[in-house]
Image 1 (cartoon, chains in turn purple, orange):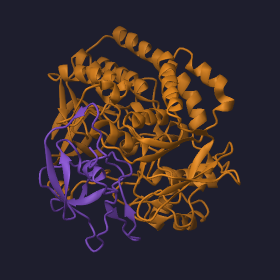
Image 2: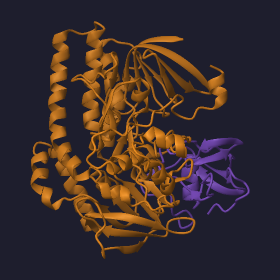
Image 3: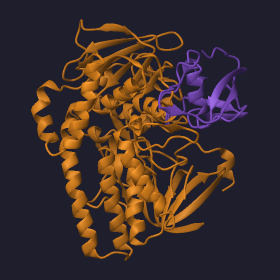
Image 4: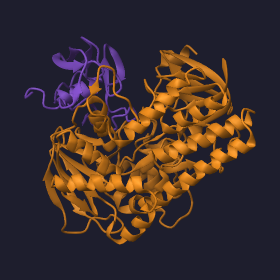
Length: 103
Length: 466
């Protein structure tokens, strides 16, 4: 499928498909996918901006250690996108709302 | 507070095999796993909802891991498995505290096994914090269990055979790999490699297959090369790579720029030693083994009686070694608590030791090729971030380091390095190497950052409810 090039299709079947809301935009997610993976599939690479320099940061360690993927998920701040499973309709926001680039 | 005769922290290969061995002998084992399902990083199982047609896509070790997980499940009557449990403290060497399902609990143990695992060595260089630059382990998790690719044109940089494994997985996933950079020197080590491989036929066969696929796909495998910089505005758009000398220092005039949208970094693994440190076990430093590692007896006991450590969290040596070490601890503890005879214990210990020796023969050669050289830690420029959580730059750290006799904990105090939410996991290994390289032949230890409870971020509400 051309519109979803970052998800592998060959030899794999996924569960339920639903939408989640990232920074006000609707993106697809599947059952069993983390918020971080759904965002990466949708082309969102920046997950937060650093404390002092406000530099973009994305998934780095990917296994729940580096804390670079902390976002506000369903209103809960400091939630790790790489470990949190996406659920239908869940709301994901950047921690610093004043900078909304999120590319 | 609960009581348990044998508590295992970690649901990876070491923890699983120790649990199986002890439960088979009749012990009741409590396993605390940070993840939702057992397997650890290497045997991480597919998430709910996912099905794959061909298990080979999950990697060769995966099927072996599934078998181990199956044995574990079968012993569920003897194994109390607590998933999503984050151990955040160890007190008086006999009590652990962990957060689970929004509350904190304590558990007293008679014997404890720490099998905390390892993670990719963080290596700071200009641009390493850009989105799109991720660890090899992180990329592997995405591709293997969530079937999402990290990018369309990827550079692999690092050292060691795990890079070849990841390259094969990315190739199978249909990614374009721009190049694979191996920092180490292979050319002068072929003979040693073959000697190390002797008897380790499975590893040898796997390695050759991986290399074959990489060659067939026409991917440049650049030996003695490292990444010196990642460039881009809001995400990585290009990388600068260079040929290096034996100390991994870039050779003048060899730099080239490659356009990529993703970088996977695999400079070997570093141990998660926070828990053994918290338990006040004695540690020694060996960067080829993953940094600070607990000092252990022949049967994997640390310097604190009754506390054992196995697997990559105790010395990075791979899953096969972790499984054997786990078996040893399982049977040794079963014996100590009176469940099996000395005779039976020694049969298993000897058997496992023999396998470990065989694996470690190869490991030693690989370690010699891949252990980080000083040049790797000279890539950071003044403005390069060393501590990701607190945005501490190399300039600040350099200033703090220039004070005579400064140790890791002094730098932590003056710069806030290691005080953020990752608990020093990302900057700790770097600061130790920087201090080591600074003191040159100085044998004095820079000393590890001292982890304090909670060693992992735990919501304050959970802690206060204790």
